[in-house]
Length: 615
Image 1 (spheres, rainbow, N blue to C red):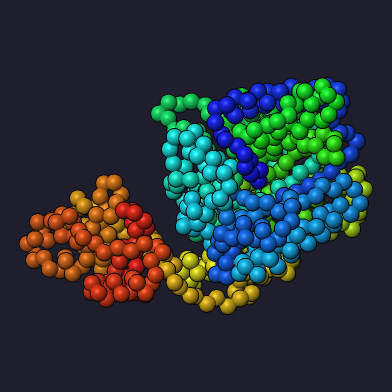
Image 2: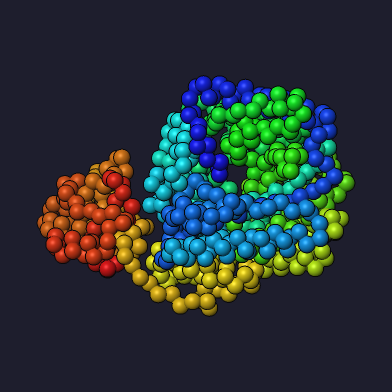
């Protein structure tokens, strides 16, 4: 999403020209492949590091453009949200100390960013989903002010024809609607690139699909979203739903998701994957393109395939085929898009070495993976691993096995051989794959977050839990010790709760009544749960009133026996506050109106309640 497209008009004339460029690019790529002009005989690796910006309270900080200007380095670029940044690392040839060099460059660039960010009162965290992100940071005012992002939001909303919806069920459930594409901005990843010889591309691509589930399972680092414990790698579900352009319908019809794993093994060439995507997905972004790729090819120059690359950047395969030009030579690569950011740089580099080793060490018998494994088996492994992480029971080559056994007994030996084949330094192989082995035996970043989230939740309000958890992640990340060695939060810090907003202390698990409920039912519910006030909703789920115990006590026994309706007794003009109302303001309202509680609403929807006990 980093390309700014500053000169785009996004009008029909530009779209018409773009379509022709896209078709020309496919033809030009076919010619490059036919004439063996795609670079071969060398393998390079590369990566993209996404990161979260936080303020001093460990909440999202929308200062990405300020940090970017201060850093002043072409390796850095923007992301969709103003609290995210991305680093594009240089490519390195897969040999010798390449992973140490990637690690060194990443640390150097991160330190540069941290220094400049700190000067602006901002901190940087590597994590799949920032625990403290809330609905408040998903508004359009947090979108990075670049035309491409606004256009992307506009087009995706138009394609969908409705607001974006989330429904993710794990230990908890998150059900939410939103009016912008900024759900996607909750995700931050460490994207991996591996150059692939053109004659081996389909074999490698299918293998990357087959191993995706197990690799994801041991790299999970995103179990929490808006205070809910969901999947071990919640990014997978969140990303698909946040960019879902499919229209909901009463008719049962097949629709291809814009974010997805795919639906079958690939058979022919990389152009067939691109053709499939162009056939299945609408063009949502365009830009003016000056050079015709076919004419460039005929003139003896290597085309950049600008239209194809822009389109490909808006189709979100978890393993994405990519075309690029470096030093005047065209190449093909696979982009691994499912690995989360964090928990530390050393964990990320270990993930990188593990995946590259697996790809490079593919046993000969798996050249035709389709003869050993159903595609549906690989796809289900991916979803199961995202849900349950290291504890997943997979189906591998038709037989059930635990993810731990598969990693230790089969995948790590393959990865060792793959890296050795490319003469990667043995000390780096042992160091990095040793981290994967230890993590497989001891625990992932997702497991560390869940364990400490549950522990803190027994002692503190939810908002404080999320802040303390984020603070501990930040502190542990500075040590650069791999996540399987991290201490628990209670050993690392002593939590101290500080509150500013109503949303930080309100109760969210609410008892509710409806207007047509009877008073005798209301009395019982309030007595059973020892509560003195209970909100009342209408049929639309909107706050309609508030029923208090004092109103019920005011009835005589005959009225109670006549089963009066809640709507007859409730307060209809209710004083309410919002999650971002200051606690001091809420206290003053309670004192001024002599009331014991305040419903907390977003619009007309009840999201919580704050009482004198909470105060």
